[in-house]
Length: 355
Image 1 (tube, one colour):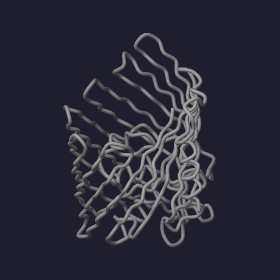
Image 2 (cartoon, one colour; image 1 turned 120 degrees about the vertical axis):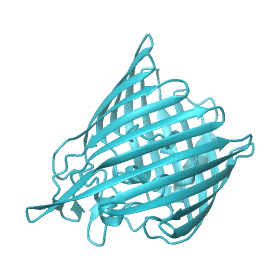
Image 3 (cartoon, one colour; image 1 turned 180 degrees about the vertical axis):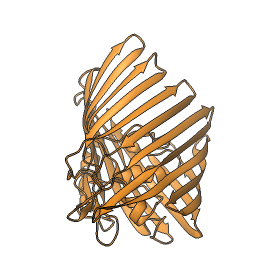
């Protein structure tokens, strides 16, 4: 029902007249997907599934705007309050001076660290599912706070974030294991980490602020970025939520050469939990390299993943192909081999937008 409701809203917005306020715009997609293979880590789903994602923006000036990212799906993934909700909701302020810019966000948002999930609504244009690293960030990190970034001469950016929530950040790779998917957690949702505990991007249980800092250099063809995240979790049990203390670093880069795209990221850190005044740290790291080629009406991509928790390391290869005929429909297939397991996907995606 949530999928149908959001799809109906998207249809009404898509058919709305262009005479609506120029300050408002919306865009999104609806998809139907078939998956064959196991639904245990590092895979996440099987069978038929559907979802709708919608972004609504209000930008009355070049200095100020707001954004809301909504999602509805037919499968809650055994989570609580996971079928529909808000993925992001923030206000944005921009101050421009010559070739420099100060940008301030306030609300709930994705950190701008990914070199893979670069499309609207934090989607990837290269594959159906994201790398293990960005799947985890989409599931378990959603800063709720303030982010400030200063870009000097359009090439060097320094940014910092102070946030609440995300106290359980680190629980999924340590308890459940890394996965390759695209299931973004909504605000208020509780996602199962194991048979007993859940994780949440929005719950605030230890009353500690987390932080992140980043630096990026870019030109017309390339980006290089280093990001540091520390949720400053108290690593204690709070009812069905289990907090983890997770300092984590991500290095990433991408390069575009004509119709070719190259991207890669590597993240590493330690996540720690505490029981009976004893601390149990787990080393976690994940990375990928990706190459993609755009053709006249299609795209082919190949991604290699490597991810580890404690002493268990897994490698995966993903190949994807999209056909994008004129219009609003995209057809895609994807095949992944990971740790001796295999998964195949086919997807139909319909895009909509109005400005």
